Image (cartoon, rainbow, N blue to C red):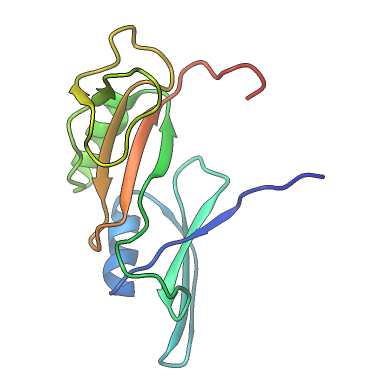
Length: 147
């Protein structure tokens, strides 16, 4: 059985502001379906991704900004960071975790700069959308076996 993760729902307070933010970052607008005043579904897809995000009115009971740890995988974290900065995102400096395995929640154990061996899965940068939903860039050049 194939189970494909295709859509993540994120909570936002202002649909138009979120839509403009993600489009400014280069996410493709797939759908914008207003259904009356209390229900609206917007779907956008990050460049190169098979998974999309949905936000809108009446699509999530979660608190706006409560989605954290959303990862965007890139093959060149320095170039991706520069492009996001040029598109208006406030992206952190590049960092790695002191333990060298994935990363801790929040900013615990962060060390400035690329992973010392420039290892795949080891370098990160982060940014948030206007509501504070937290995104992490993760550099993966060579995938782990079976991936």
